[in-house]
Length: 271
Ligand SMILES: Nc1ncnc2c1ncn2[C@@H]1O[C@H](COP(=O)(O)OP(=O)(O)OP(=O)(O)O)[C@@H](O)[C@H]1O
Ligand SMILES: [Mg+2]
Picture (cartoon, rainbow, N blue to C red):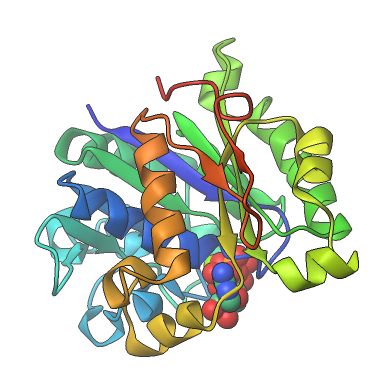
């Protein structure tokens, strides 16, 4: 049985889709069979970031409504044979995502893949709660700014109350991914410090992704940054985060600083 991972945040535009694509690709580059599922019905972004927008024929809603088989909707990545995408529809109503439909799709995907990565829409409404519903593991994507941290705190509350795991009385495994971290702005005091974010949210740190033009370049090329430029700083940070998800202990370096967080802040191994 594969693991279901939700990439969530509350606040919009913090880097969920970028991170879903990059971590999905990084895990697949490490040999796992991975599917990334776009839950952002109506916006549909993941296929663009993964360079598959012209190959979308059927989507998640088609599968849920019985208009297409799961195998017809899954798109295999052009570069990695063990990386797949289940796109969202651009045109349809969000109400087409039903709880039973999502459950059927996720159950089927878990049987066929090592990782099922759910790219959540922004907000704390139904779309976000459906995306996290079946998760075994959650990544909370946060930018080092007050509004993002506040929304992440709300999302952590939902992860601990509205998921199947929480309802069963089990603890949701949660990881913090700090993205768009800009050392120059941190130095000037324009952004929250890593320690401040960790203190407020108090969940283990999965990684710090620097603010970088490489992310934009990769997105313009239609490739996850780990595939577009594996040597770039954001790609390296995503590769390290993927290793931590696999239970490896890898120190987290703060962009622009020599010190690293080791053990203390990422002490727990992935279950
Ligand atoms: N590390 C980074 N450096 C520079 N730009 C970034 C970085 N991460 C994300 N971005 C940019 O920020 C924007 C928002 O990213 P993304 O679409 O991944 O966020 P999101 O959380 O999925 O947004 P939404 O809530 O709308 O789904 C994009 O233009 C993306 O290229
Ligand atoms: Mg998104």
